[in-house]
Image (cartoon, rainbow over all chains, first blue to last red; front, side, top):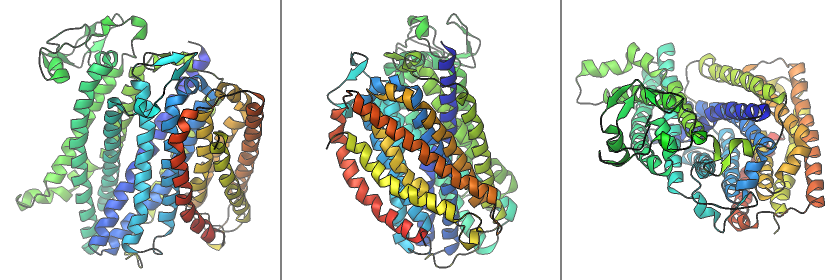
Length: 445
Length: 172
């Protein structure tokens, strides 16, 4: 593969890896803010509303970074991956066109929502936040539709290097799209809920809120964690069915993820093994029949193996390590979240209930958000590296999609992204730390 | 309505708002945040979505032209992207980190000049793209148009109301 193509792939991966952090928070925060504002309005508590207001300012900072990185991805797509656009334009264009609308709705109403705190009051202000949440969801929905088509394009009619279709809508709205959209968006919500939960754990540790502020913070934390438990369950169920469908629709990727060497029934599930270059698996703990059972609810389910595919179509084989790491982190996140939420159960003995806001529990909550972001990153890495060497699965190889040049820009953007990341992190840190304890705001109700 | 209007309409909406943003970015130079130097609420990010819309439409409706156009606009467009990030860095620095009553002339000027640089780049990109489209015989993806019309017709009036109020207060 030419150096420029490799550099372009690395740049695209960097850009997407950077953007997804801000994108997922941009999708999740509007929902989280609506939940908190709704709580404040229902309880007529200006303190809770002030928390929602501060989070909305954080969203603006994140949107600034997200808009910049998102635009760069658009630019990089057009300048470097023109042949992909040419190839899939008649179908992918619809997804990206819709994404533009959704993003516009999100960005314009976010600016309006933030600037109208104290001017538009009560439920009217809450309603202004609804288009932001709809827009951010729509944005993720549309972009993921486009990606899902690249993962599993179905049967295509290609004439002169361009996909022919009479119905781009039905090409986009596939079962793969359903699973990818629902699983990834639920993951974004979960990651954001846990990030904000971590912020409040920090707030509690740092400022030791008392009286009304403590009551407000605890109500917010419980609401966040209870919603997070809901999304833990949703992502787990969706993740299972998505992986089952992956076994049928993208068996090459499934085999690479699950360390399945050859096509077989009673396939074992291997934990901790690794691929050799010849497509054999070394080491690991084997649980007999388990992979077949997971793939098709029966040990007799036949699961395709990697060795059944030509070697030049094998994906990047380290994706099984990424996938196992993801599952491990998901286990940690889920356990801590469920334990924290369960400790709120009213029939529990008071000595156990007291643990929920004890120092060890609060410290355990701190890393959940960053860990959940890592899970999202790992999930997308598995999806994207697992699709290689194709950009449109089975039809167009990644090196065939490269159309441009890159030169020293390959160094410029990662450096700028790092600076932007640092500046954004400092700004958020200042917003939550230096401004200190929340004070009841006037004029929000 | 031909496909090209999907590119032209968002650009026509975007240009006046961008000019307002450029004006405000110069007007605030040397003024502390609490005395007219404020530039809050990220309105530029909101209006910028029109540019993204135009870029998106162009990329996907004229996908047959993208390889030719990309080669011609590589330098101005990628420069635009780089300046865009520099502007975002300065924006966060000026309004969320360096919250001081003292102005920061160097950052203020850089911030304002970023807008000018982006305006120059995007003008070159637009003119070059228009020239290539006029000279070539590129067939747009007509099939997408009926699926994109409703969104444009719905979205423009929907976002114009909050945008009007945002700029009405910002301009003061």
